Amino acid sequence: MIHISDHKAQIADVISTVSKIINMEIAVFDEFAQIICTTPTYRKIKGTSVHMPSIKEVFEKGNVVVTTPGQMESCIGCRFVENCPSNIEILASVTVDAVDPCVVSITSFDKDDQTIIKNIKYYIESLELVVQLIGKQLHNLVIAKENEIIRLAHLSQSSEESLITDQEGRVIYNSLHVENCYQAGSNHLDYWVDPAIHDLIIRSTTSLTVEAEVLGEKRILSSKPIKQNQKIVGYQVDIQTTERDITVHTNPFHNFISVSNCMNDLKEMITRIAPSASSVVIYGETGTGKELVARSIHDMSQRKNEKFVAVNCANFPEHLFESEMFGYEEGAFTGAKKGGKLGVFELADGGTVFLDEISELPLLQQTKLLRFLQERTITRVGGVTSYPVDVRIICSTNKDLLSEVQAGNFRKDLYYRINVIKLTVPSLRQRRDDIPYLVDHFINLYKPNINNRISGITPECTDVLQNYDWPGNVRELENCIEYAINLEHGPKITPKALPMEIYQHKAPQAHSIIQENEAIIIRQSLDTFGWDTQGKQQTADHLNISLRTLYRKIRQFNLSDHHSLN
Image (tube, rainbow, N blue to C red; front, side):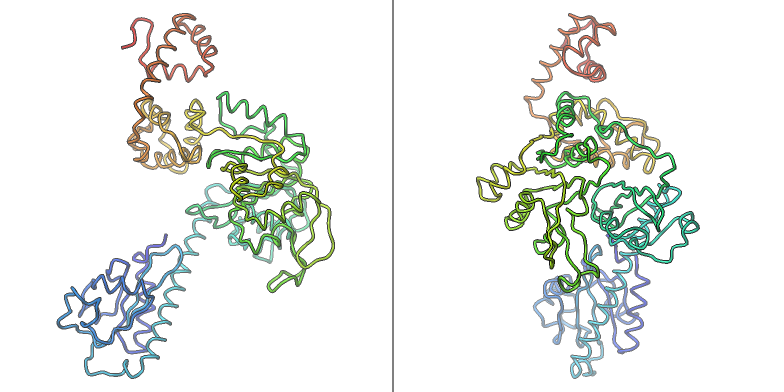
């Protein structure tokens, strides 16, 4: 978010120039009726703040013309209501995405001057010009900030050869190595790579690695989206030669941070179904990592060297579904690209298409998807020729699709077409043993760029995290640890550094009863197998938990070989 008060100088330049042209006083207020910047005369007469109801009225109506100052309904309670210095005042709001809203006012303090009243249309147009100029200035500030964030992201983790693009694929930064190596003359990604690869990169919401030609030379491209406030503002594209040693993860589960039995069962199921070409539906709550599961299936399949294209069905405008999924021919509609455009299914031909949040797809689009799944051919918008396409379909949802069918929100025939193999990703509260491992992973991930002093987490903090239910699952845990690394002053994260809703969370009374029974079971097992290292390992195996978890619970319940449980 851009705070307009941080950019008074740029706004002051605009109002100063326009004020001299129209010979009127101009002021800009924030949403709290505080003056951001103004011409000297306005500040001298009215001060640094104005009547709040007047500002609220402008935000509600968009613009307001005050022809009888002091007599308007919004003037009630104003300190100038009995003797308003203004002769006439015209106000309008300025709203720009990612910027604090503000109000602009054009005012005359000359009681005998009837110029504005006689030429009201001219001054309203002048105010609209000021609003446009300020809006443009603020928009440019937003773009500049996003570009700076992108640049910082590049500088903090750049490779030898890399490009930084905006969200539309315009190259706004490249490393000197790339510039010297290719002497590129264009600032758009589709100059460097084939348009199909360009489209694949800017459609991806996650990291992507493909082999492609860069200006005619075979290269490996690794792209990842750069986000600001959960919005993709650009992409970093790293370029490597095919001869160079490239890190390849031979373990398809390298991104799975888990020791729990339920996750081990899931990994075993993935291994069994990956070689198949059958459709898969991945069920799971928000934030459980359904796309990670989909990528693992792809990486273990015979399609692993082909493209994996992820599509979020909830983000598709209905009128764009066909052109995005099936592509279009040149001249298919106004604004269509010269040469047409490949759709998602053609881009992924031979590979995998991941349809995230499939339950959010409208019924009409469900019909079109069903037709493709039945015929396995596509016809581009504006075209007449059908093309066969070979893709594996993996879907995900956080809803019960069968219930959606029964409610009339999802087609029954589409449900049975895609629901061949069903996988369920456990929620984080179902795999609490994984929390310490996930915490270690996120600390190592974030501390280099935020707080390198952090070395771990206190046992008390671990208890808090394991007693919380995590409605946002792993994604919420990741955000929690990133937040804590920002706030923690010591070497280990303590409970007070956690977000308030987690730190102050009170486990239900039943949980304490469960804990007491758990402590009794652990003590009995240790008494049976022994309190030495070998006995603890046997206890952990018997209880189906990791040795690390057993040691943590021994500390948590204050268990020892010499003291009984209180």
